[in-house]
Image 1 (cartoon, one colour):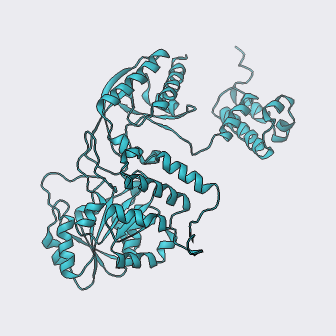
Image 2 (image 1 turned 90 degrees about the horizontal axis):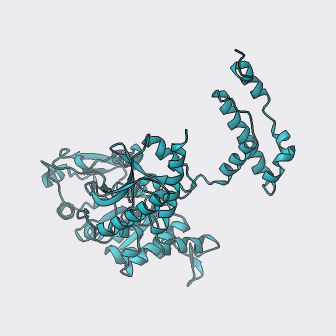
Image 3 (image 1 turned 120 degrees about the vertical axis):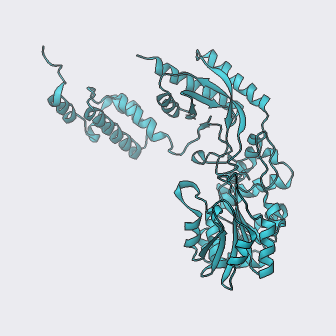
Length: 466
């Protein structure tokens, strides 16, 4: 039997040699309508991508030469931003990989307003001279936390680094072994602390640390007593720890400041089924912590930021440190954080999406899952609604199990199905449990349900093709 015309290495090499050049494609009449109105630089990049994709296809053994439709695909790719919105159907509210806390509409509007032109970021309108970029935030933060002063940097790890560098470089920092946590991306609190130039002194054991352990470790060279809130893991069983109030009493007796890395950063008590009690920043300040650091994009529900509040004398040293300049935030972070803090000041935490997502009632989640089920059923997708458990995420409240509801799909290859969902025009991020695809509705807005249904229906049609 004769071989197919393009089979074998000879046929593949012939197809590879036949791939057109970019200049040939730019002059090809059939592509003129596709490239009309496209800037030349983007057109060239898209044509190069199309040829590269065709070459890769041939090298994989696919017997399909370059086609004009390859350019359509490349143009769509070039027009799609790499950073783009996704639909969060994981049930994880503060999903680090998905950007953590969504911003309140007030914060989004403030960012747009400030970003589109000039602002008084470091200009005092009253005095007509240079001002501080932290001025819009300090009053709000001191009012909400009862601290004397405040500053904001790029994230909480940066805040910890700055506090230790400013207050304890070359001196000892005493911290419990049970609080030397690893944060996201494999970064560890002890490593961040050492980069500050402080000398780490570990006390107690992994599961038990007593007041006497801290007292025994104090020397004339002690710069700080450090308390790290275990926001991203929990110790249970045979445990003992020293609270902030007790540690502050030790510090006051010996003239050593107490620094608490609170991490998750709740400004007000959270309400919601499955949520355990979480210390607020005000509680830490009122318990006697001299300096407190926390995140802006976790339980606070604002932009990524590391917020430092505390005693004015210590904050003055922190603000004067050279790292403050290196870690400073931009105008859009200041705008988003100010608008978010105003919601708390005005007694409107329910307007902060994170607070609202965490406080949803089971009956409203079930109703939303049933609405998604109806949209999917109308598109021929077989699906059932089931009770599931979600997570807070973002390294916050690790023991919390959030009762929720989800649409469950039984598909042939769940991994492949989720991959196709991620490739939809509106990417949907779900998860797999017990071999089934789970689409938790906790983090899906009402207006997003139809987009999820369209993406799932399209993926189901792909799966059904031979």
